[in-house]
Amino acid sequence: MSMWEYANPKRFMGWTRPVLPWTFALAGVCLLVGLVWGFFFTPDDFRQGSTVKIIYLHVPAALMAINAWIMMLVASLIWVVRRHHVSALAARAAAPIGVVFTLIALFTGGIWGQPMWGTYWAWDPRLTSFLILFLFYLGYIALWEAIEDPDTAADLTSVLCMVGSVFAILSRYAVLFWNQGLHQGASLSLDKEENVADVFWFPLLVCITGFVLLFIALVLMRTRTEIRARRIRALEARARRA
Amino acid sequence: MIALLLRDLRLAIRAGGGFGLGLAFFLIVVVLVPFGVGPETELLSRIAPGILWVASLLAALLSLDRIFALDYEDGSLALLATSPLPLEGAAMVKALAHWITTGLPLTLAAPALGFLLSLAPEAYAYLLISLLIGTPALSMIGTFGAALTVGLRRGGLLLSLLVLPLYVPTLIFGAEAVRRGADGLDPTGALMLMAGITAGSFALLPFATAAVLRINLR
Image 1: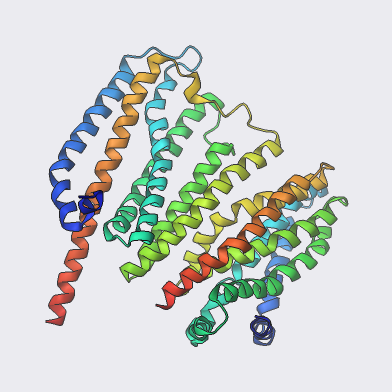
Image 2: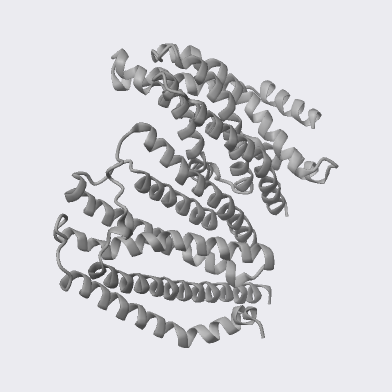
């Protein structure tokens, strides 16, 4: 009995059906507890006032935006090595969720940035690399949508995901280099996690758990949808041939 | 490999537009920028490195879909795939041919256009060197993008969307090297990093390109 047996489409549908509502419920509870705790039961920051509370949306979303890409990379590798269809579909299912998390991170960052830095947008290394990550997601999704044959699409997008990951990391460091070269915005990059006191840290941890669970639940649900869509297509093709 | 290179070059020259299109686009962008931002010499010389790099990047992007599209349509790409020359080598030669027809003329024309944008005199050498080192990377990355979208009917827009984020590091290092040269700082670091990107692209991307071509020809 290896873990691969749970990835067989039929078994996957079988074990995800009971698991899915629980994951959603747990994610909802974590988010509710984390956000309510964070918004109403933590003190205001002495410098940032109540704007600091946006951290409970911003940091988990940013974290998951990157993790979603890493999950897509792993799923693409599994597809290339083992040609496992569920893994390709999971990568496809994760991409739009990653886009939404990236957008949440960018928007909450802008809303947070306005009172703190006096601007919604600055060409800070972190902001810029998220914008580039957003473009990578868009290209990945567009390539999936553009190709009709599902196996070709899975192959091409997984190569794109691997090459894109290398270039995304390159861009991350290139952007750091570029910004230091301009001598601006060094004061913008708050090293968030290390400065956070325990009062903020625990609700943040609950929120991050909630976002991770939400991501897992959404990926499972979208993968189930993709599997069903593919089954429908197979049935239609069979009906046309008959 | 040399025969393939010569064939591609000959096709680019005789079909017309291979050399001309990218170069004309580059010229037009650079000439239009002063009309857009105003004629102040100081402002122009400050933005000149960035404008020259962005313009050459867009000009290279313009001719990318020609790399494989015609060969795919008339079937010579399938012949290339079955020929004794490994497809990885063919991909590299294609990128090289694209560079000779767009990157090299752009590099040679850039100093003349830098004059129009009143680029700082110290920066000319670095502009030439950075374009010479950087544009091969643009061609190689673009060849990978062209291979990804070769099977699609309307691949042009998708190609730009896929390739532009991949161009970001090269653009940053290229424009930074020229800017540092113009400010009298030492641009060696940026040039070295860009050379690293070019070398890395030529070492690894032919394999990705060939893999993608095989999938598309399946």
